[in-house]
Image (cartoon, rainbow, N blue to C red; front, side, top):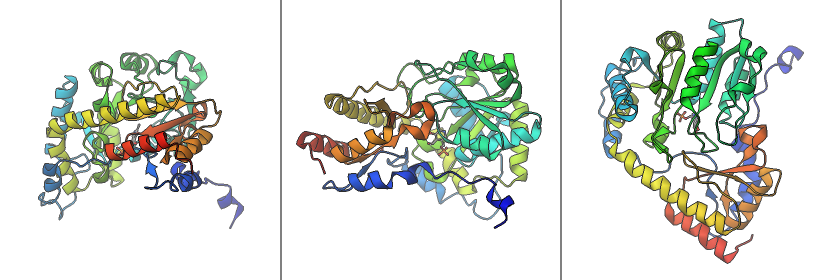
Length: 377
Ligand SMILES: Cc1ncc(COP(=O)(O)O)c(C=O)c1O
């Protein structure tokens, strides 16, 4: 191998692949490991959506990269119902789930503004924001997050502002469950000229106040990013969208069209049906709330200090350990659960763990029984 190749980019290990030894411990419990690490939905999507996936007649031809008119109308109507905003369908475009959008957008923005080389993102956050910066050969510069979960925008150095191609925000936050001030973020975008991309994929699961979107404050220089994965238990069909500033959306939609980024037609059909219905979201909200309350009560009874999240479906807490891997190992040993160590979400998160509410009540009750028996393995 030439030295030029070996000195290039080496992808970091995928975070969850680092949990094998902890999973082994959890698995020794009778009944096996209960996996609360990855935030993957376990509940069923509606039967109408599943039916729509096989009745679209959209298999033959290439699908629209933007998303079909029907799909984008359903997205527009959902935005109007959910946030009382009126976004023209020309300012809405689909993506293949939002992870690929998060990972690829810095690169496309840097191509457009080659003199900029910095991506600003929350210091405690979903790992793909930083990785996307790296893939774009940008500097990933974390923005400190206050105890209240809000980005400390005033702490960003002027030099970083001058170099920033974009800023990511995420409210409700994965992993902290905190809410940010989207009005302030909108003002930041417009006072600095730095595009703000507001990842709002957990908005339906807002527990404190009403769901918010940056689009409620305006659309100039901001883009809201949404996904069906969590809202409708459709992580498997990979549908999301981005909406907002017309120039940003037009630019990204055109580049992405050239690059062949298309949500498959049958998935677009299913997604249209999902966005038209809010009833299933209401019942899913009750499911997550029940699990969050049950697990929070359980952890509290075991002596952990676990705040109630203001949004999302994660519990985020620490113990006396300085390394969340140790807390994760303790929880695997005592309760047979697998959780995510805080380090996955950035340097400041190291002592924490994130626990995803992705097991049904019978499994959560099994965890409570293990806790009572102090079933150590
Ligand atoms: C904050 C955040 N953004 C984006 C995503 C990506 O979701 P998807 O690609 O399924 O839309 C996730 C997934 O967990 C997430 O937590």
